[in-house]
Figure 1 (cartoon, rainbow, N blue to C red):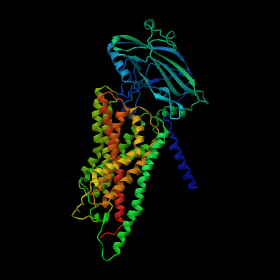
Figure 2: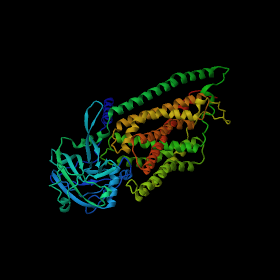
Figure 3: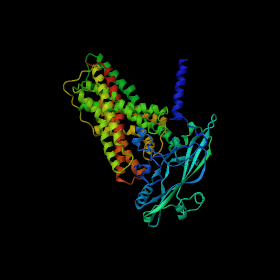
Length: 632
């Protein structure tokens, strides 16, 4: 029975992973016929500038009182600013065409609107926590057409006639709300929101009488487009909208599925996993050869030598047994690196576990980033513990300095980069700039929670008795033989970083597209598989190169083990630059600074995570092989 129960639990977890199931972030909300449904507006975004702006930074129709909707920490860091709007939508009530307001645009307004249209800004609305999206058809390699959603809708459109550039604003929006009815109480539940934006230049008569609808508001009328060119100097714009309701047999729990299809290509993800598995199988074969053949034969030979009366001269990795556990240079810095790696690793594993279970679904906007920030703060306990234990093993006396370095190293670098980027965003007036209150809250999390937890973990780490290493270290360091050119440490480190990067670079494309092209990423099951493959790859490549290094009588393996797998972060950053030049069309220098700054933060976190995995794997490997032989 116990075996059957364990099997059922295992199959259930596998089903959750591979079906990418997610728990809805909120309970279903039903609306009675005629009940008001609020339409909320979010920040304007552009893939060309990466600078989000408030919706009401442009001269749109405003409600009597603009009210900010409470955002969580993740939403604020992402630049979301959700506010109310004057649009009147009632459950089940269709509106053929309704005038929202008339806006008189001055020259500065026209200049601002034309700039935003030129930069391809998109408008983002929310109805019942669902983003308004533009439907479109995509055709895959087999020729099959699939309906997908593109988040938001364009602010306007641009065209070039000869040397003249014209910019038009979408001032009429057809809103189609997909719904079903609850079989119990017959309440309306929203399962989709589609928008069709149009640019309509209503006649002067309609503008003066403010009676564009219903005479001119039908989309079937062939009216000119509403220009916002600066040459107009001044003009008036009528904003109108229509609301349609369409019944769909879509369950409320499945209403996000079509939104998530916008970045879904399972064939490429499976190819990525297959590519990564080939790398893992190659490395596993090498590790198996070292463990089962080379290392086993070494141990047998050494044991035979121990039984002989006239001992022969030691060779290979056994020759450096008296120096292999000699403390490295800069032991405090290495301890801080390893402690930070533990912190990032623990945060990543827990975040991914909850993502697989669906707690960070798109319905919980900003929840993933919020969780990652808090998890990183609380994982400072493990950072302090492991850093202190390692530093104590090295015989370091300055445990307070080591603890402070661990608490300040990665968070300090991140905060420095983030603070500079925040100043740049604030200068541009973007909502990507974190408000002063949130900045103070982040500092409070760092110094009020993370730093004390690092000191607490360090306290327990130093109090715990270190594991005794039975191998005595020689007083005089052994001279390392001259290396051949291809065994140079820098070259070996750079070679070691290629394979872990090769295991993840395809998945990196989807992650970067999610961040910089404002697409949804939800395939956490695939990501978890790739992450496991990455961990195995880092461990195996570090062990293989560490063994070769020891066989060449080079005992400086401490730093090399961390940097070998950590070097993959260098290739991640290079890939980020490649992605920038091939996939993005960023037009502003400020946006380039933002991209490089955030890419540095990501690559640095990847460096600590992979470096820790490689270091800990080598430490276990070296301890195991040298404890398996008899030494004088």
